[in-house]
Image 1 (cartoon, rainbow, N blue to C red):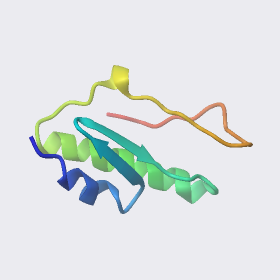
Image 2: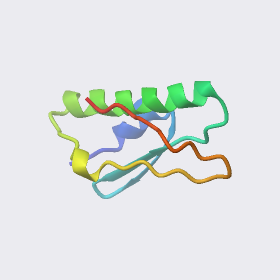
Image 3: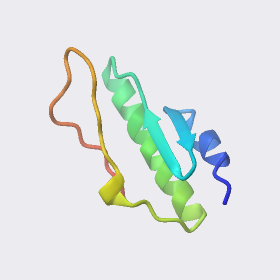
Image 4: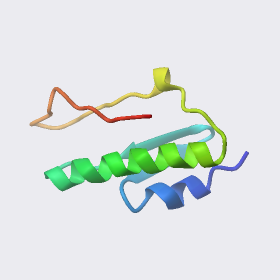
Length: 79
C-alpha cells in the first residue's frame, strides 16, 4: 500500500512526517490561523482515508504540545 500521495493532500495546511504506516501532522502554532490550518490538515487526512477506503485508529491518535505557553485544552476533530 502506498501513502505517498497523503503528503500532497496535507502539506498545504500542515507539515507531515510519514514512516511505514504512521503519519504525524504538525504545525507550529503562533496565531489562531495556525490552529485553523492544522484542523484543515486533519480534515484533509480524513478525506484522504475515505477516498482510499481506509480507517484511522482513533485510539492511536494523540495530541502532543511543546512550548512555554502550551494550551491545556486542544480539540482536533476527527470524523
